[in-house]
Amino acid sequence: MSDVLCMGELLIEFVAQQSNVPLEEAPGFIKAPGGAPANVAVALRRLGMPSGFIGKVGDDPFGRYLRHALDRDGVDTTYLMVDDSARTTAVYVAVWDDGHKDLCFYRNPGADARLTPDEISPEAIRQARCFHYGSISLIDEPCASAQRRAIELARAHGLMITYDPNYRPTLWPNEARAREIIQDAFRYAHLAKVSWEEWRVATGCETLDDGIAAVLSKGVELLVVSRGPEGALVTNGDYRIEMPAFPVHVVETTGAGDAFMAAMIRHLLPEREKTGSLKTIPQEKVAMALRFAIAAGALTCTRMGAIPALPTQAEVQAYLHEQGVT
Image (tube, rainbow, N blue to C red; front, side, top):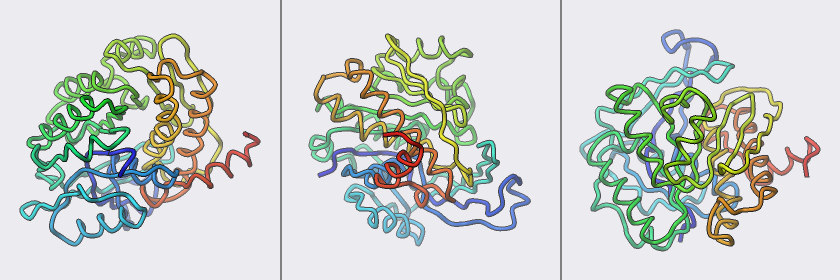
């Protein structure tokens, strides 16, 4: 049984071997498994929490490679479906030291977009404690309907629901459509994370205060804002906790936000089960979760790739100890 079920895209990433160059100038690429919800599933396992993944890959070598990657980390792949008429999605990634990325997706459509509502297992969701989703699976049908079906089941069974928009402009038909779907999807979530680079699209607001108010008004109990080298903040509307980033040598930033999200889920899920709401968890517990999440994200930036870079619980604890944090 999985404590946390993550649903969405699982794809092959080809990450440029040289940083700070556009894709057309990259001399070569490193193959790695990726996809934000899948990254969160693996990160949770490495942090000690049982997780499973709901999604679809193609009946091809890359699909088999991705299943094996999740299996190696102990992620439950029972509900990772295979499509024999579409290829596994791939993305080429160029990265800059400031965290900026160029992404080129091969998904026309990818197998991940072909997951259907009848492939969602009510029993799997009933047995879980938390359901995590993003926005990419809400772009195309039939996957969008499958995603909504899974969310409905998660709500019906009282799971904690978590959401990270993970806005990728090139996958959407236009920004207006992205704004509509991404902003609407907050209404299902108890815990949401938004990165500063996607703030305007995800919240519909320019300023931090207005965006926080807009998201919390949809029923989100706790909102986390990740700001890269400037750290992160968390708020329930009554209080706001801000923390700086930890100093690391940045190699590549892919997957850092997913490690961050997994760490927040890992620490806050049991606390919510005690109090009944993320909004009522003691501030010191929320602050501890935020500090751990920032450290997990920072460590991910020190390695290449997304899933290969995700740290273990022991690695994050050791890093915090090195930083003088107990």
